[in-house]
Every structure is written in C-alpha cells, then in structure tokens.
Length: 113
Length: 121
Image 1 (spheres, chains in turn red, blue):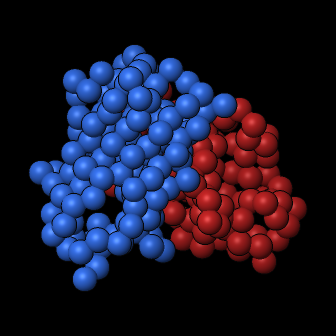
Image 2: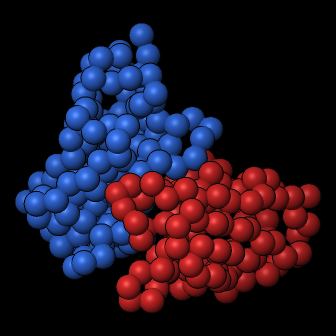
C-alpha cells in the first residue's frame, strides 16, 4: 500500500498569513498519462470532507483562489495564500494512482493562532 | 445539485450485522462508480470499498474483506453497504462518495453527510 505522510500534524496560523501543508507518498504518484493523481480535502469541524484540489494542482469549482496545490511524483504541497477564519479544519491528502486501496494522509489540523 | 444521503447507522453488538444505504440524486447515478469511506471518532479518513457503475467490479480494504459487501440498485439510485461480523474497530462515521465515470473511478468530488455506526456490547 502507498503510505501518505503529511506535515505538520498541527498548523497554528495568524489570520491573513500564508499556510503550507506538505504531503509525501511512499511511491511516485505519476500515472502513465503524466498526471499525479493526488487530491486535497478540507474537513471543517462537524462537516463531511470537501475536495479542494484534484490531480495535484487543479482547483475545484467554488474553491477560493487563495488555495493552490503543487507538486508531482512523491512531493506535494497545499498552500493557502492568506488564511481566513473559515479555513479552520483538518486537511487531508489522498492518492488515487495506486489502488486498491486508496490511501489518505493522517491529516493536518489548521487552527487560528 | 448532487446529493448523497446516508442512512442505516446505529448501535449494534459485536458479531451482528447492519446495512447502510446511500440515496443519490442530481446526477446520472448509473454512470458513476461509488465508494464508502469511514472515519473512526477523532481519527482520519479510511477508504473502505468501491463499486463500479454496473456492479461488475468491487474492491475492498483488507480490514473489511470477507465481512462487508457493497452493492447498488441503479433503478433506485441507491448504494448499499452490508456489514457482517461487526467488530468494535468498525465503529466510525461512514460516508458515501461519488467516484467517476469511464476509466476514472476516483473523483471523490461529492460526499454525503455520513452515518454513525457504533459497535458495542
């Protein structure tokens, strides 16, 4: 199974400041078509997960442009350019290249400092 | 708009069975693969199982293989998860999530609100 490792586990951020979450995979996520099939999800307190980013860098419809994804192969990053109060929650990366099983990172809890 | 609504959760004793349902609307249900994903209390997300659009392919996490069965009724736009021989470690919120169409079964672009399963004596 592909192991997904996120860091940091907890991320205190001041409102208006940037935030960055790292996700590393135990195997390259690059598929034969050249894409890395890596999703990012946001889970606000008490809510279901919401997909933010797919194929490493494609932002979902309705996701604010302060969210961006980058990376390929085994190293990926989710960046928030200016954190807002509504961004509080847990962020997960998930690989969908090598399956089954599909595997998630352990999560990064973003909180306001 | 796409909606996924899970039901069927509850408290069940170890070794017993439970069946979850996920009612879908707002998209062509019969064209999409579908998943179940679970989240133990205070823990992260764990993929459980996948079913293709026509039920011809099913995949399971090792932790539930042989105990859980995924199925769907495309005439009722409903996904099911039959859970047998339940264990305490199966306690979790269970989410259904939309997969994809064609060769890509892993959209995970829409999720239900989840249903809580508690396995306890």
